[in-house]
Image (cartoon, rainbow, N blue to C red):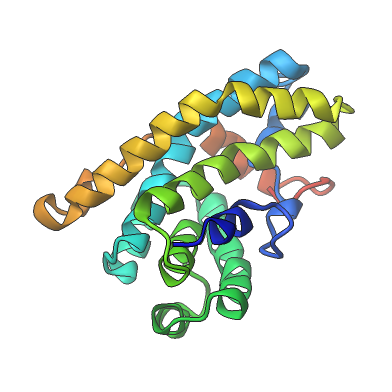
Length: 224
């Protein structure tokens, strides 16, 4: 296992397209739900325990060796909004390019061939973690952190926040991130015995609604 590989997967500078997405915070800012560092922290905490937990579970299961095509279908079922499904697959295509160049593996090649339109991003991330020799827990950590790191970074631009405030809120969410990653990895460990439905499927209706509305905007700073 390489801790450096985990750092690379969790690094926002990995050319996987995440920098172009706000994780829903652009819409939240426009609607007034996020307007300062305190409301941003509440947004990130909510996202972490819903969309973040679901994504981390999928990533952990992929890293554990669960059939990625089965997981991709499960990700579709957990993403009811068409706009967000399209975004997840777009991010998956970009992550696939980075993963194949960085951590090449037969699993990634098979998934790329089976899903030329792009698989959901957490599944690709999980396979990359597996190829790098990381554990399902490591994959869950990378996915969970990405789910709050992206919105926090985007909010710095959207609200002209002090970057130190964004870093501070991510630090304050460290215990929540630990709990989400652990729960995701534990669920992934139960898939073989209990089936795919044991994976988290936490919902966030406001994120879903705002994501669909954001996709219809003619002018926006971020793709999502």
